[in-house]
Image (cartoon, rainbow, N blue to C red; front, side, top):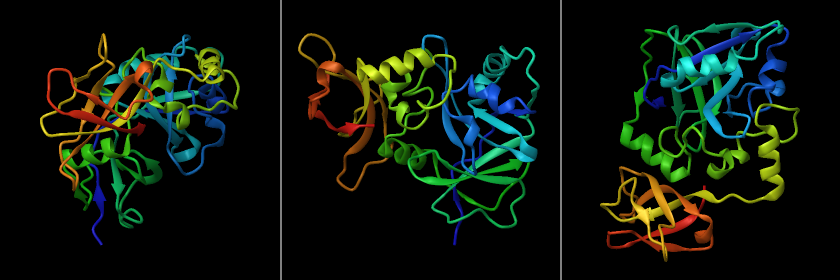
Length: 277
């Protein structure tokens, strides 16, 4: 059976180790770090106002370490943010970004038995697969999906991506991250008070939704409203479905939460709203 993978990636990797590592990180991330198992969990890094600073995965690394993995372009920013509040904590931090690389296995029951490195379960494009962490320079025997195939799967599954649906300064519940990346049952962390109030109120001013659109629609196209745009598309799948339509992701303003379809601004056709991501 072929081992199918997302394209090989270099990521920002920070290793935290020491008696206070879990306690310290629990005060920095929205995810509950105390109960990590064999799965990489999504987590937000937020500021004191609950606004997104980074989207990461947290998991158990080798030798009782805890790894934080995020976008490579945020490497310096992420390291500065996650070490800023280390004062008297017994924690050792190491940047391993240049030493490891990631492939995410999909459509495969398990990683190749001969592969070096280590694995963790993870959900990156809407279905649970395996993260295979390999020493830098390793060339695994796998079949890589194309960029178009990966993006089509991700968008169809309603999974937000950094740089498209996710950006600094936004509120995580707008993208549905409160369902997967935020723990409301642990102690305090930076931004916790604001996010808890949002959960209690149960309201956001915009929400990430999934759509079906016709050929020719692109990210950045706006959804028409009575007096102003009622939303904007952030990602459109490169490949169509069996019906010839293209999956898309975008944000709906509160006034359009109950709509089932919306016309596009300056283009023919409509965006059919499938639901919230």
